Length: 255
Image 1: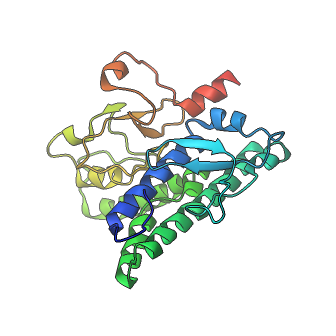
Image 2 (image 1 turned 60 degrees about the horizontal axis):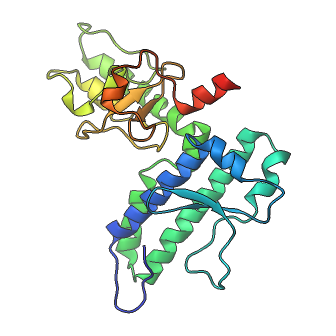
């Protein structure tokens, strides 16, 4: 997003779109592309920062030289702690700082584009609807979804007859291994729709909605669901995959 100089004014939706693009990029760096990110954070190099770009691409680079910078800068020197911590703890720390940076950038744009109280509140509510990067990286978001699904299951089972088998409350919704969410069969149980709506992509953290036409695929190892585009799997390619492993599970298998 370009600066807000002169008479240019961006909307809340513009800033939120910028936020989502940067967020998706950072989540990729810390999940599906974590091996590449880890290798780029060499502790022997100078202070490095993790940047998420609106185009959903990320980069590890030196901080901006100009003072003050065009937009707030990410946490400095994340590479120095890489070998001094457990990898999981280090990634969690980077995730927390990434969340703080995303908020700072959005607040900066809100101020620069002259958002009033209502605009700022609407922007915050839009941002707050999505799980934080920390929640996605640590799996906290998935646990929260399971807890909500358990409450939904318990509530629904009291009012529904036993004609259909109920899902276990400790698992993600089972649509099918390969799924086009919009093509679900008519007459599907309301409970299934509610649970599907709480499914998160294990890569970008996006929430499944019945209205979406996005292609999804489930990992046969960790049972997490992913947008096909996030793990670079097309419906045609998926037809030839008997047992799919997501990037994280594939990496663990190699280790």
